[in-house]
Amino acid sequence: MSDMLALTFDRSREKWESSTGLVRERIPVPELDESSDGADRSKVVIQVMYAGFCGSDRGIWWRKAFGDMIDDSLSEEGRDKRVVGHELLGRIIAVGSRVGEKYNLKVGDVVSTESHIVCGACHQCRVGDLHVCAKDKIIGISMDGCFAEYLKLPAKALWPTDLGRIRPEVAAVQEPFGNAVHACQHADLRGQTVAILGTGTIGLFAVLIARGLGAGKIIGVEVNPHNAELARKLGCDEVLHPGAPDPERPWASSDALHAKIMDLTDGVGVDVAMEMSGFNSSLNNAIRIARRGGNVVAFGVKNGDAHIEDFHRVVMNGLTMHGVVGRQIFGTWEITKSLLETHSNGIQDAVWKHILNEGKGTMVDIRDFEKSSFEQMISNNPKALIRFAGH
Ligand SMILES: [Zn+2]
Ligand SMILES: [Zn+2]
Image 1 (cartoon, helix red, strand yellow):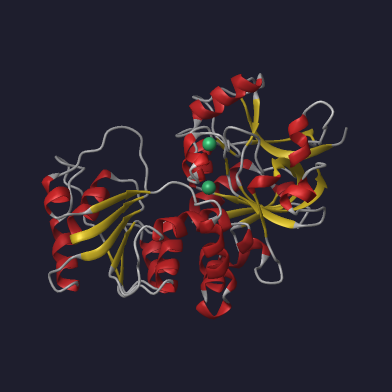
Image 2 (cartoon, helix red, strand yellow):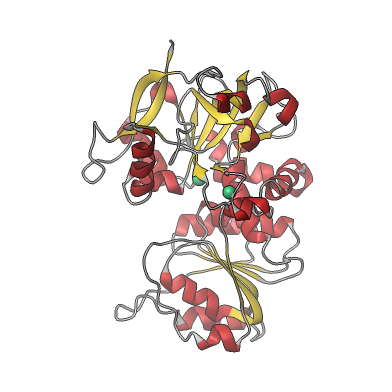
């Protein structure tokens, strides 16, 4: 059996609580074996070209999130090692016997993947709401992922990608881009005033998408000056600082931000407020700056309780609140494809130039991976890519 390079967390090697990062090591290449597992008939082996490193991966890197999910899933599988990573572009190198007929995929096809592997049998799956499957597994968390030269995936999750229309480095981030598309699908943005609170990677994608979908005024709210600058470049009409939090009430909204937004919207408020930072104060800002009858899209996550300030606002202002998870399978992927492949909207170029910085300082080859320099890269950039020999 041949082996391959992979970035892993191994609970028999390092303790979750007292370690950081991922370890590069050689592990066996996954293979299809239909005689021992019938499910392999509907699976493929993919040679990875590029993998994206995202916020969830940072959560794993610094042991801030997903520890329980990784631990539970490893116990279920009776293993200790998890290959991390869920944003990918790769080429199919082997297919199970039913893949061609059932999924119209073949060896040589270039694909990205939906990262939520749905069960197909629960209530949500049966009514077509696959993105909220009750038993979904997440690639790189509850099953092995794509920070590896090869991985095995169910064909049903794959998204064929035409490299004649989209450059491979951008195609590798269709999954997180799709997350932002999904957030933007919750309200009709055409002609609307949209606030995006938190312009990290997903917030920056959302700026491009809102612009591409025909939003009117787009207002960013951001603390980090580098991200604020990027948000302006990518199409925000204004980018505001939310102001320093009140130490006594760190969850509270900002009077100064509210006043400024009212000023920019003729005293009305924004039609759609998208919370993409995960801070409690930001959620309260979103609720407060939305106009009466407006939409609040909650995307940022933080575990534990949140404090909703003046809850009556939500009710008495007739707000519509939305929680966003994952991507509609595959409706969101269709919109993602069209936004990224329509060159005239400038989105693909902007992702490459500004978010991926044309690969400069944002990309490392797996063969050159080294913990401390990689940690620098993921700390300094909204999005980092790992390149594999398959590219
Ligand atoms: Zn991700
Ligand atoms: Zn399901």
